[in-house]
Amino acid sequence: MAFQTQPVIMQIIPELGPGGAEQGCIDIAAELVNCGAQAIIVSNGGARVPELARIGAVHINLPVHTKNPVLMWKNINQLRKIIHRYGVNVVHARSRAPAWSAYYACRKTSAHFMTTCHAPYNISGDAKKFYNSSIAQGERVIAISNYVANYLHEHYGLGEEKIRLIPRGIPMDRFHPTAVTPQRMITLASEWRIPDGANIVMLPARLTRWKGHSVLIEAMAKLRRPDLFCVIIGSDQGRKEYREELVKLIEGHGLSGKVRLVDHCNDMPAAYMLSTVVVCPSTDPEGFGRVPVEAQAMGRPIIASDHGGAQETIVRGQTGWLTAPGNAGELAESIEEALSLNATQRAMLATRAMTHVAANFTKEQMADRTLDVYAELMRGEVKPSMSTGQPFHMQGAAE
Image (cartoon, rainbow, N blue to C red):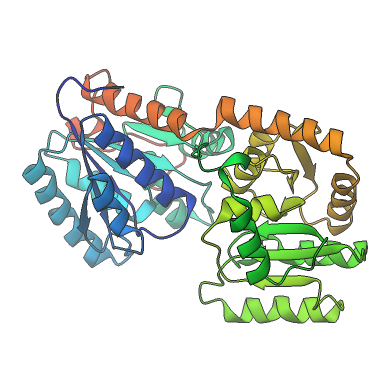
């Protein structure tokens, strides 16, 4: 879409590192610039900040990652100054702490305030529920899946007039089998010391307990197939004890030569092409989950836990498998079934999966729908909730 006049859109995210929320933020900034808008991202910095200069977006460094009440209050004043300085039309917060600062910064300005909810946050009491409620304060709230939309409706009383369902999208030009050269695959296989002729089971997920790494290791132990080699890709992000726990579990099952932990991968399309099966055995529901979508876009069999966003991105029995969360035996059976596909069955699954992603989860679709929300707000189709100086009432919220 193209804007008739140049709007100014400011996105706020804690940091610009790896991750789906960060990628979506950058993708939207790039699309805004392409459409003639000014794109501003406010964050506490990160490794991906240089990308913004290349796409023509402005980055402003503020400690919006902080949960310190004093610093959050200071951020309000700084954000309000930015809104006035750049003439910001829409402020789009993508996390809870920045959302509080952004919400109050927008008051007494003409800027519209909206949010994206990336996951159903844990509610362990009234105080936590109130803290989480910042993500529900927007004039519009983007939910990245029906699972997240239901969470917003059930816990914060948001209805269809405020929620906009916009799944995450991936760049199909990058995540496509023909985009990966053989040399890129050879380079990774050599770097990871993958045995020739091995069937590769791959789990791309940062090393945090709920991602289900131990479930996969237990499944590998049950399979005991000499042709299997497992690659777990993800940084421990300082969780050294959990990494050591996984290493001991691998050794305890006698899988030291069969399961490899890889800290990071800068070429995930090539990694997917190396894989025979991709797994996402998360024990907690994913708000969306990029890996199942990326794997399907690459034509790879995907097995994920049967909850959360995966139920919306995988067509059960057609583009992948859904297994009971935490059930290593069921995961092992599904891996065995995926490995048993003949060449024709595998090609048919790949075609269905790639078609499914192209129809529902592209970067272009995500960007178009998000920009439509910005335009909707700027056309004044929604009365700003900030006009009264009070947040709208949420059912069950702490007073």
